[in-house]
Length: 114
Image (cartoon, rainbow, N blue to C red; front, side, top):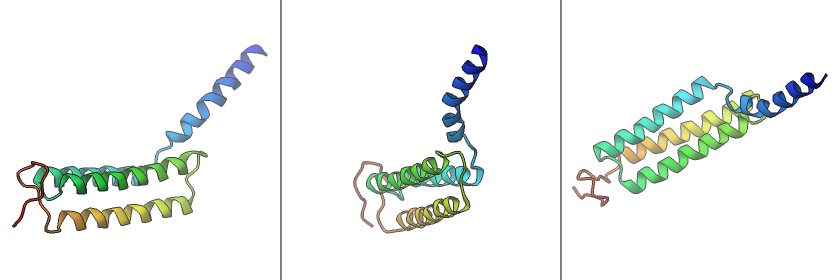
């Protein structure tokens, strides 16, 4: 009986961690791709440090949405749709910032002029 209580207590403590570890492969892969796009923009100079910081904040927001969705152990279709919508918006922001006329080609933290 004592062993059963210990097992149950361990399960209660581990269950929330398992919920956070629930895989969301499409969402996770897209997050990784968008992070990579931001890093590539910084390395190429097409993103200024300020733009990159703002885009990273957006990525953090999307990650927090995913974490909240996973908190109860199930990512519903509605939650998944909201996350994907936020990822769509974030993707548009990344593209817009990478292709605007602000550049930091010499990586000094200042915007270069054409």
